[in-house]
Image (cartoon, rainbow, N blue to C red; front, side, top):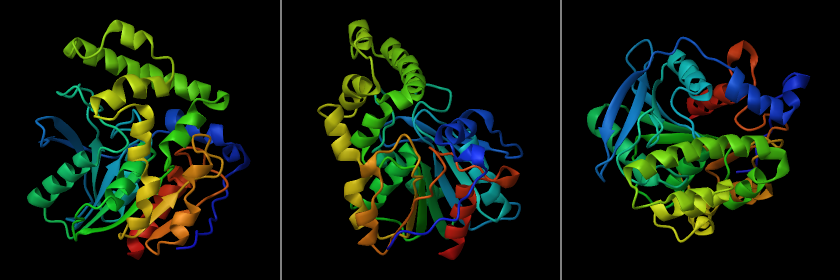
Length: 319
């Protein structure tokens, strides 16, 4: 479907992509969301923690929320999404990917941009234990890439799954990685790498035979991390093979569930190949919105409700 016009016009300060990104990630806070944690067993013997929040009255509608790299279910972009959705009659299941709920996961493997097997386990669990008539997906950054890959890679999609919204999506993972390795994003890259290395040292303590101190010392960049850990722990040849196999861009033509992608033009994490204009033009199920502003998972809005939180609600309500 042809790309959607955007009417997002924030105040001048929030037209700066970096400020918008940093405000959303570090400064913004969201109150009033009560979450109840459920631990589920995965098919490979590992576990995931799901944080549930509920509409005021019993709902038959559910939104599954998927966070980004090194996020969790308590990040403001997740709790902000849950708050507006709960207020409008949707229950929310906020996923903590493996190792992201405050406790290391059991296996040497963790989460990554293409781990759709975990999303399938989550949906299977929800469908077997709850009675929702309409289920929607909303993902941010890595979580957005994962849900788009899931929808387009040939899985049997449940009939209850009615739509999806993906925000700030690195549709081409290699292109996005190159952006993160550039000077303009050095502070973000340092922060991500520090968090990832901290978790990798936990893995090393649990699985000393899998990775050595020498291996960890060689990790200088995020791509080095994907070469040393992500690819090897998840059966890819190397970082480039991981990026190639897991980028959602190649799966977009096959998506048959109505899906909205919102990628800001001033998102410093996204390169040219992360804006799937051709793919959305040729698939009536895909909607692409490219606001001039928003940064990476930014999109400030009045009353502490972001633009993408309102747009996602509007999109789900339209289906």
